[in-house]
Image: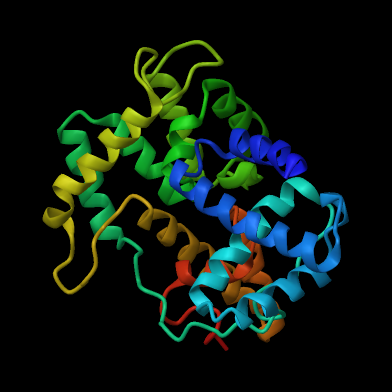
Length: 297
């Protein structure tokens, strides 16, 4: 546990803006269960010696305890999260390899339509909320999470425009590189022009403001206006995160059109997972909605 406390502090510091306090402590409790099992069953003494056999054994142990598949998935998410800080060079088996049941629930369609997106952008412009507009465009055209949009500094934007690649530190401290589409390049250019400041200052957050407050203001604007722009034949709530779904859907379809055979379609899915910053490509399936890669020919 002394070793784990050190890893815990590093993990929390690296993912503080990408994960809630509640999630951190939920993961902490699951990881403690896993470590107690490894110490008791395998006499494990060093976290760096964690291996696949420990995870497989833990899965069997938790099943004998009668936990649900959902709880087991949550436990494994915690183990994978901390494993990145313990053994970053090694990978753990995915859920399918561990024999977890596939959830039969079809993925929900959370993506915005182009009409909905344009309508919300127009409302943001009319209200003088350029922060909302630019953040939405970064989510739609670069696949950024809301905390990634508000974390961007002027230096980050300038470097991206110079190289053509936006470097983002996302959820769990995972760093990814996103090639700039023309729409994303235009968005960053406008943001630099309209929000002047020093290189190390955040691009879409005023100097005196706090980042979490800026995030709440953006989310509140969308919440207040989403029923006005939602297409009536679409039975779902529009959220900022849904713009990442739109980005993922478009990027996958573009790559899948060029692919032939299921292997190449899966490769397209893996590429999109990298763009989104997902640790496991299975997560990306949810973003692609009905008719995604599991059914694409």
